[in-house]
Length: 636
Image (cartoon, rainbow, N blue to C red):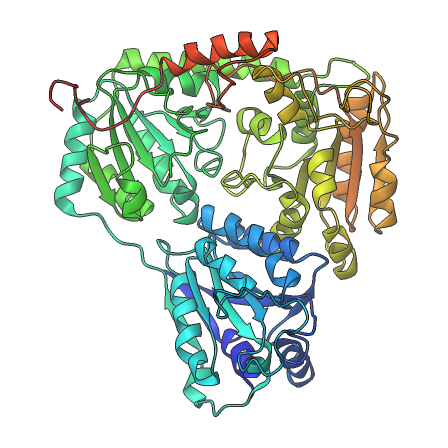
């Protein structure tokens, strides 16, 4: 067999086992072919399609970054048990996957990248698209994957394939190590022949590890919770990936401990659960943030504590606040000087804690406050998502209309702009897999590819992509891929005529929305702020790609028309895009939290000077979370 033939057939026989669940580890291959892989992996895929079309399904893509995003979204919906392989040609085809690699690794989601490389023999140096560095002839553009990958190898000789691909599968299926896995394949090596042992091509199972916590550590956690007056849980994506939602619900029903969720953790507790306070942090609810501010014990479960989750280290203000972190990765378990680090699977740890905290309940006063804060925030959301009758509705109204027209098992998909923040605090999640917002990398352009990946992973659910015009323009070409395969998904395209999120942020830092609006250039004043709005018709653009389009016209009935359009799209068997205009200057309710974005220390602009004053005031409450006790300067 050639190296490519052996690789593709090997991948077709890999299985992930997670308890009673057994599924294909690599369910298919995305590929865009060029001179680097058309005769190697391209030929191998073609050969298998003739010999056995079901063994390794092949999918076209229109952009290499997009196919990585689609694979990552699929993996997240499958709780990291399955993913795709992505093959690209040398040079720009390979480097187009770099953004997707970074996104996968940051979000701890598995994807197998197979970038082609230039000739290992160097028989034709330099070939088309080859990087040449005079000081190091061994470097290719694929070396850029090294800091973005959890595993990296380059198959320079055919015999190296065996150890390289087994090492790759180990990392893909490891809940601690997983992320982007990169195997560079020189174009000549791809086509070279080698003798392949039959056992290499046999079915192979990879068991997902679910480590139980150390018993002594669990006893410490139980004591710490019993001693706390106002404990709070911060639930992250690890709760979803370890299938621990039911265990979390049982634990908080027993104890009464409230839960705030990170972006990745939304769905770990449904919105109407009595202990669910919703989102926590910079894009959180006032219910979660007020409880977090006074909490004396934070129990982080499966979270990596991004700055949005911690409000840039301002969210937790109790002078003696301590952290207990439960995480399968020790790297995350020790964050914020954890008083107790529990290196264990989220579900296994919760099951043992539930047993250890029998007959424990938070006190009545704290329970009453949890109910009060939750009730107050629900009223705020009700008002924010209600139709106003404005011809250009607020984004919060648009979210409300989509929510009302959707079903509990539908999946809302988003990634960047102002929508993730608004969805985090306003979307009422009704299913543990019903919320899919990529906010580790918050990558503009993820949304449409991600929405298709969600649909592939869960064909019995409607995938509803909510995307602003800024992200849409970054990458909308994967619509063509969905049309080609007859994949149904729904896109709600919100037309803001600019970058709404960064426009608002620009205002808060005193930069007056500079460079964030879609207008004709004012050459005299070197800006895009004062001339006419660009005549952009994104609905027409989408229609040209083959997707069905519904336009929601501005007017007093815009929100009702949007809800009707979503219902029409859900009843359809084909992909549909709904276009609606919004007013980007109407903002969602305040979170009573903060995000640290530095403001110029000196400025000739009065707006920046005022913003700096506010920034300094917020910085004053930032805290270094270093453990149970702060170290004084005298002690140092």
